Amino acid sequence: MVDTDKIKSLLPHYAVMLVVVLLTTSILRTVLGEVSLVVEFGVILVIVLAYPFVVRRLGYAPDVWK
Image 1: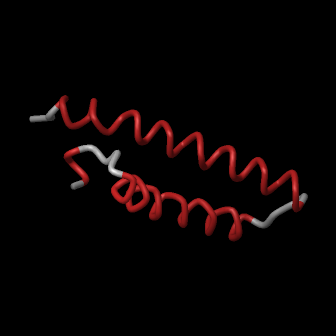
Image 2: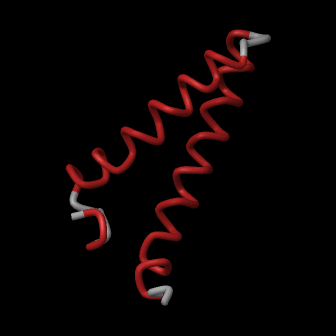
């Protein structure tokens, strides 16, 4: 069975992560022009892997990530 409380606690963090990815790739394309897919994927991977760590260090992590 799906635990809706976990989903509700994680949803804002995934939304923020999506916005950060979109803003970062947009800025990357604006500054560097045409960027290869491999570079964009690398940047996205770094953001997605670093976000939970940064949120935990700042003390804003949901209980599911602690």
